[in-house]
Image (cartoon, rainbow, N blue to C red):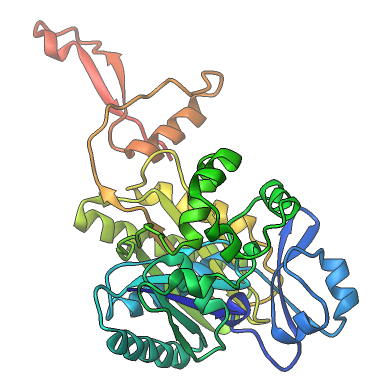
Length: 393
């Protein structure tokens, strides 16, 4: 039995926005902002996902605008999926938008009564987490999703095994995963309801639409064989620093970043692992959350490199108010593996000092020496040359 959880206004709830006024969640690409989430009040005013910021403002001038914080959305999904592990280890997310979140859970082979009871427990738990949801239960993902979409928040809709085709028959074909061209062709053929598609021979749809036609016929017939993926909580290491009063000195912020980097590298060294994803999240005292993320080409296992990366991420953030908290998070952890050192393939020979500093950050400061001839010219070959340690700093 597959459970589909539908969470309306997910982006607004995940950002913990103040509900005293209509709320819009916006994402900026360059200077142009677009809406990725809106509360029910804003939707009633005509605001839609994908709308430009200026148009949304015109439709709902009293709306409070919050910038999208991808790190908060990611953490929220992780929290929800972790809570679902009490019921099943098989859960995944349909990432088709932030306005309405869709989660699937494989509850295994249950009697209808037991499945409904478990779904009601999930609804109560999500309500406590602040995410009201509706749940559809069915033998496949598609049937469960249609059931969840037609169900009110806080309710459960169960579609029994063998009843899928009859349940789907009156629903419009626009609920199927269609591109614009396929939707246009179905409209020209007069196929408006799923029952009309299910009533046609499968071979006819294959002849008209190819493999897509076969897939559509299987979906409207209740034959959705897609499986729910197994959820494994991501392995991460993070450090959170909170400031009271808010921190406003950028130099002190750099010192805090360096201390966080040292702490995290110590943890990685103890576990003999590296990281290939660094996320920096800064929360300001005006309720704005900023984050920046990078996935370096080479795994990071040295504090000097992590400090430099963290400071470069901080420079990308537009900090316009005092910093309330700062979180540095390392992801994509993997065992430390030895690798062949490549010293000079990307270095600029015109400035050897800069090259030395770069190499010192990559490989440490205690591995570079200069060679000179011993003026005493001893007879032992090993003593004819002198090694002097180079101080990179």
